[in-house]
Length: 116
View (spheres, rainbow, N blue to C red):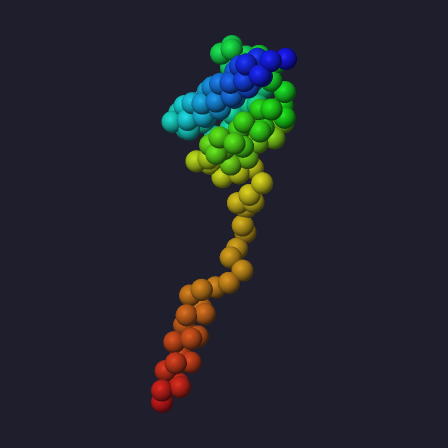
């Protein structure tokens, strides 16, 4: 293989990767603007296939989405856009473990007693 052929192939790969990254960023941005909380990875693969990026593997998709910086999390089923909390974050908290108001009151009483 000639050096010109190697450079040509490398430029095509870079162009493909740059275009794919830009397309993924565009799709996730549209989803965020439409207030979509989760994006199906299978649906994203279909959209990319229709836009000239056929036969992407799940690993390739995950790498591009992570590289984009536009998603909080991605797995084989769902992509969570950056403007949403990631799927691995537990938001179910029953009661706070510390009563801040009570602590502040106790500290205020302690400070008053210390001054007397």
